[in-house]
Image (cartoon, rainbow, N blue to C red; front, side, top):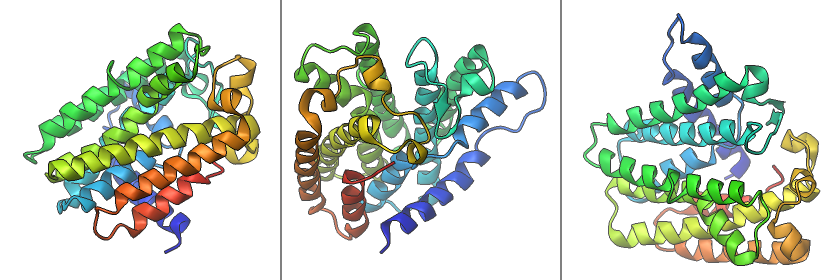
Length: 290
């Protein structure tokens, strides 16, 4: 299996369904719908919906169409968070994946509403699922994306202005801001499939290790990555004097920890049958350059 080819194939499947879920309405609200589509169509790895679909499969799920809707809803939540992250009141980024950020392509108010629109549409999709595990999955995703998860991590980041006191505080912030939505994907997929507690626990530990490794790699890429490949300027964390794994540990220790976390994540994969894809994806994430 060529992992990059397979990732593109899976991302394409998700995108074809994702775009169709945004209402096509002409009228007063058309501008915000255009902004929602603009941000969804900005691209990206589609990592979270891919993880949701894969853990749904690994846990024995069979209704791919219904799972695909749930996975797309999760991507909408991720996209809304990026729209808001880029706003001047947050990270103040003008570019996202090589294109102007939503508030630059439209305006501040429209971007704010586009994020709100995607979040509400996501939960409309999840709570309207006919699957008996739909509401349980929606509740878990809500928890992981709320004040006990992603929003909680963002709050720590904003209140501290990115300048955290030590590695422990950085770990806590990352586990919530970045890790919680990855956990929502892995654990959420298992919950939606009706997976047993052992598989759910395994998927949770997998997500915790991958989520932390993912953020350490992000910190490295912000410091020493390729701007053309990333589609945005590097060094933004340094300019803002933010506390990152790169500033606290240096490149060599960051690489060592990524490898250690990746090994721990791969260990959790052993309990899943037909886990070749997730194992290859885990290794690819460890060494990604985008």
